[in-house]
Length: 458
Image (cartoon, rainbow, N blue to C red; front, side, top):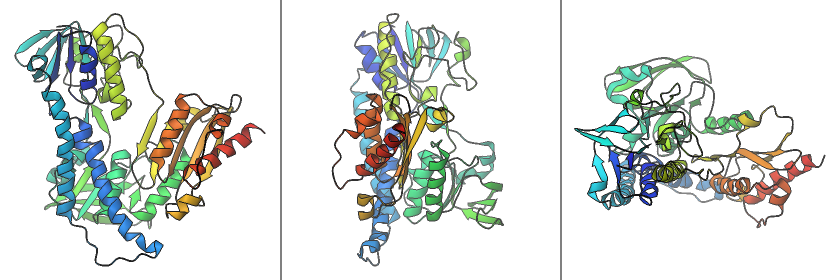
């Protein structure tokens, strides 16, 4: 066998297609469920739930425009039916792609390394010149959740609900916890969101983080540095004892479910990596080159969530292409395209990070920071979406745009504009030469760029 790819998800499938351009002596191995994390339990079903929440919220906020509605209801059965049906449709597209692969090229079973080039797959032994690890990741569960039994859920479980529950406690104010927590709240579910470190991931800019926390705390209970005194199963509910952030009093609340959104672990612990020559980090993940995806100087490559660095679909697909290409033409490898970093949280307002994070730039004396508040921005106020704050980072000497962290209306679109500028290595003056229509939210971006440019010219 020339190439063996372990995992048929968002990284494994692109890796298979890329490697197959170089050889037909290739196999795709999958021991879990086909359908990709994104389509089954990630990007797409979560956005379906968020879309329902946005529809409900638009009805509730219509009075701000003088449009008054009465007797509107949220039918949990109908909400979840649409989520499941559309989710299954997206998964179906992925399954169609997998099923179109000739059976001789894929195996349904778990793979374990016996050495760098030998895999145990079920009862079979596969010798492969190169191997791509694309096994994805799984929700991380903390020990304190063990007592919650049937009340404990992860995001995978939500999208199989038949209807909406009355209450959910959410642990982890990161991307998953914030998106799903706010969506459930807007769909009439009583929620409380608990954090531990005080952070609001993925933000690293404290100014943006604090602004975002204030916005979300005004909408629903959120304690980013919660003092949780205990959790236990009481009958068919989870009882949580905690110190309330607002009044400092000890309280007890019961919830139908506890959603653990406390991160994800790379699926590498059962691969038998100890039988290889690979150097592993503290998480048991192979040390690899992010531009070739090669693990050390071996013939093994790793891509996607399995490396636990950039757990995003577009990054997984890019890494899969790079890993598959290099596995297929090994040892004649080349560096692949790594795009400008781009992260988006589909909360409301949305959160986005582009280019270098503030944690990478803080303390550098040549970095200037431009700011724009969306509270007074024209189009944002027109739409009653005027909540937001953006920080733009630039190099004082060259004027080069370095990155941005922000929260604001339609941040997903602003983030794409900024990521294109970052990847093209544009300067702030060059960005200001680009067209800005009136009246659009992007005019707020122009205001922030002008603020940066003013500092560059001081």
